[in-house]
Image 1 (spheres, rainbow, N blue to C red):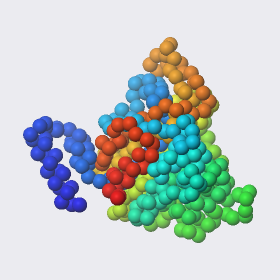
Image 2: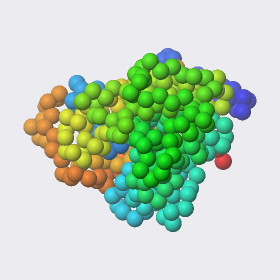
Image 3: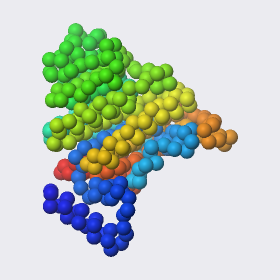
Image 4: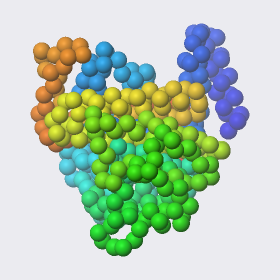
Length: 371
């Protein structure tokens, strides 16, 4: 491994001398990163974020958005196994497990049989793992990386899976599915504590005041049910991303896998509420910016940004102007348009092209060097 890495650096030096000279240190660092495996992967999912949402976010922000910093771009085809129009459960399961499955499926195949997720594989290989969402933590996208259930709305059953596969950190809403359950008398918060978790919640703490606890698993519940929208004051996604990266990177020789979801971009699309969408996109942009800065400094981290599907059929109308958009919607559900993929860091060039959403799982495994 060390010889191949040194050899890759030598090849870059030779190519620079014979073809072009790279004067930008960041560009040189990126060239080196592209020629070795990823130690860490940070996978950011903007639920419901299609190209139209990205365009609106750019034009509503003086023609700027952090996604413009990526140089490796691709497109994925988001359809599920049973519908041209996917839902978040099948879409996230495709990312997490590398399979096409039916709408509503959480980490299971078309026969409802469990399929190991990328997060579970990371645990098996002694990598640290984390999940962050602006929805409940048992919602379709985060659930598909850690749970196995035939139906996405079996929230209390999904919560039980957080004790079977123990992520090193998870942050999101949905505390009531853990400690005030309708199906049984179990208190999963107490069970998490017995399993070695430090458990905190929004009732007693601000996430900005929570510090990483080395060698201890952490859980933070941001709401009893669904977290509120960003435009109503929700502001935890960036500090949650910072805390998670800090926690997963400490004293860690093996690397980590972290999924961060901007969940409510989707909810704004379902509501056909342009302000809702744009505020969620702004919140997501802050996280993308921070993660990219961190990855550039780290040099061993693959960053991927994509969406499971587009929501709302968002359209920018002809009378729109920069920073003054007239936005219309064509649907209150998801649409079938192909979805952009942005990648930075080791193996980022592998994310170029047009491919199935299931290929993202394979490309992540390849970036880690897993056979």
